[in-house]
Length: 155
Image (tube, rainbow, N blue to C red; front, side, top):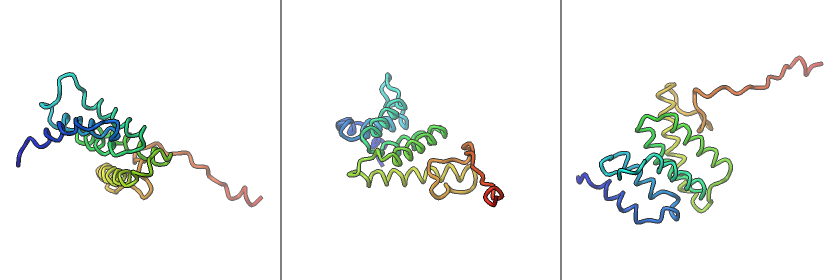
């Protein structure tokens, strides 16, 4: 198996218009530069480019770059950044900032981020992400819950 496939993919991605493709070409390049640092240009910070690519995708309503970013951050051991990416994804989906024409890509992104979240949850608690709990984590501060005193209702 040739070892230069990733480098060829990175160079090929540079031929695509980054704005037209939701920041994905630069995200691919950044992911490859993190994975193979010898291919990285000297004056480039791949993690910064990855963040910029995610912002481009969020602004355009297509969230696929978040998968690459989460996988790279997970590989680097940056759990807090992975959690932030997953939270941002859930927030974007609930605020309907996504483009309906690319819903399949967003659902793919959600499934991939769910798998990453399940991995984090399982490593920390032995259980997967709770149902409807994507974007929440075991170490989140507990929300204050209004407790209804039933005795007050009987008066």
